[in-house]
Image (tube, rainbow, N blue to C red; front, side, top):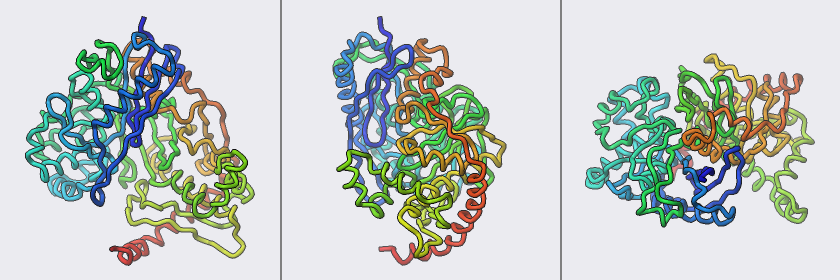
Length: 511
């Protein structure tokens, strides 16, 4: 009898297929990569045919590795990269390469839209800033630059939704992915008529919106052989990767929060209503859990800043770790632990790729501030870890200023493995942090949760706590917490003092 959930996570670097049983246990995973093309400055594209290949290959690989008969699959569910744009024909075939979330080409389209509908109105309706990062502006770019192709497009889709359409023939999306388009009205749960009118866009070219835990079709016999599962297998729409990660982290009830630490980092909450920040520092997605929202603040370089420090400040750690069969970061963590909280008066601004939350300044740059001849490599490393945490604290404070008061922060992502960084975060946030048992499978777990709820294998989303329990609680040290409160004010003042310098430096380095 079919009893397993096949969950796909269509990420930026590739697709991960995972298999979960009715008790929520992960039985295995398989990954298939695909490339990203950067054909012009600010352009980032992927071939949607590669997504389909990755889904088919990873499915077959996973079933082979786990010795799972395809007939055991009760249903397929999805998570996927958000804020993209791929035009599809009526047969769900892509008409051009997908414009993915990282693409920033549609600045002119954002400006035109902003002249027709105010920045404040768009933020109020969608929970998001007006930006070329979102799907709407990318759709309008296609209309302006490839009008013949635009007219041929039956629907504009996201990554996971394009695969669901290819599997089932249904052109659908879910509220979490829809809410990353600059088109979704958070208050009504539908496409915004005001924004559609301002954009002069036909809603018929947009997918229908279904709850994340919805069976939206079954695998068609025409593609079942390619993907390796029986025709008629139910397909669940699932959600965008950020909201799926929230569910996989157990953030499925109001008042809970999580912190993802990867190359970038974000803090996100589960709330019964959107959080609209008067300074526009944060944004709000729909959650995959019905009637919940996911206010979020994202910074550009977290683990990426630590990787920069490893490569540029500690290259010897890489070779030394190889000889000891260790992760280089273990050596860096041990060194950083030799420096006291506050890194002996050294601050690091982690703005190596500009910044999103809380500053939204693409010209921002990284800096060590307070450097003296007495500072050591240990101080430099610790300052990097602290700088990332201090910036995340500013995001957390933006939520707290609007009344959100999480009592703890759950940690997921590869950067959450470092015990020292966990303690720094607890001390900086002034809150306990919860290390979860599974730090790096939360996204696929969220997709599996949506699938299991839709198929009746899980009673509701609350089973997330059992699927990914808290492995350790790290409490803040009161003395160190007070020290970091003082440093937060200096950290903020340092950024503000450098804002005019960033613009001058950018002008000097323009090609």
